[in-house]
Amino acid sequence: MSKKKALTVRVLLSEQEIANRVAKLGQEITEKYADLGEPLILIGILKGSVIFLSDLCRAISLPVELEFMGVSSYGDETESSGVVQITQDLTRPIKGRHIILVEDIVDTGLTAKYLLKHFRSSEPASVAMCALLEKPGKSQGHILIDFLGFSIPDDFVVGYGLDFAGLYRNLPHVGIVETAD
Ligand code: IMP
Image: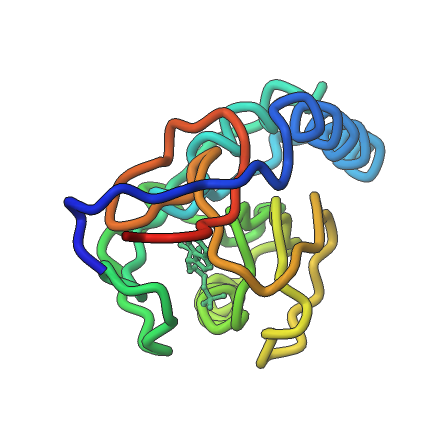
């Protein structure tokens, strides 16, 4: 599919539905880490989780630090290559810290599986996983998602951070790509 062709996008999750769920996830995280006594580190995966992370961190009533990790696994294609490459690493050590990996979507789970293993090798005090979306049928790695927004059907989705060929991240909703004429 080419970047130049227009897509038809059908709303799957409205802006309001997402806002409600993100507020709940923020509450769940706040409750779970209430007694931490030190800042939690939220690690967002570029670029897809940026919009979700920016809303999620403001729904958490605890001290948090933000870190970002750049990975590349898809290019402009809609199928996972299965190869995860780190294009930007963390700027601070996570040894002994409590971290939450924040993903836009868990599809095959290969990216999350790779990153969780990568983070664990740095010996953080705890590692949790938060994902806005998951496609349950596709998971290859039995990833335990501690904080999940929505389970969705196995369709390619865009919006609220998720892209197709770099576009559509700024849609306020999540939509299913129906056609690419
Ligand atoms: P996984 O390694 O197959 O779980 O893929 C994870 C990454 O693939 C996500 O962080 C997204 O960047 C991308 N991805 C997977 N499914 C979709 C989709 O439906 N729309 C947009 N990006 C997707």
